[in-house]
Image (cartoon, rainbow, N blue to C red):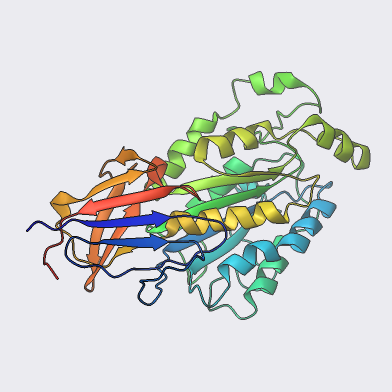
Length: 355
């Protein structure tokens, strides 16, 4: 008889536990990242991929409180990654929003990853990894006021750093870029500042300003479309007015918001307790790197995949791919096909052998 194995995967913020359920001839198997239990299950398995996180920290004169807020709330992020039970293969690094200045011969800013802690790239093997990350994030406020987060992350990612963990990002890792800034991005080819005065909307009409697509195209090519950019910034006029009263010169992060929207990233307001947003960014990043393991060897030609009922094609850029490693069978999702938390993924296939 022809046996069809059906595998269902459901994503939820409440847990990152994958439950593999036994199957037989003509039966079904289910996987869930929820903490729910099922009456017919085998031992839980966790299958996480690689995640590289690059923090871009605005180090201009008005950022002291925002950097401190990030340090205060960071536990919501690191708790997701650094839980030893999850065994997540992560790397984290920090740059500043003026790292681009190394392009113009500045001696006060370099594109290498910041290492106040003495360690440039934090990994699961880094002693006191959370403390090391927080030390690297605490960049102070002596940086340049011409913030260019986009140009800075590209410069840093292209730079050959003196660190045993290069390259960064890894070719097979999901890259999450998290920007912290109370201004906006004004990346362009020259060293002059084109941001103008706060509140002047005409700066966005400047033809010298790099289009966002210049950076999305770069990141897509560098990561095989396996990336997202998140922004913790000023999201509205109320927040801008609040921050402007404290320091002056702040702007709504319009380009940061657009970048996050264009890449499937998250946005968070500097004027709120953004610990929940950090947790959401962490979980989303981990889920994007999660691999789904099938508990039977499939005939690859028969694999069919749906997300919430919509058919998904086999595509290394914006679909799914199948691989076998050491007798284990995996589905990976890429680009626009990466399931969001809460979406249901259904996989049908013919197994190679019948139990």
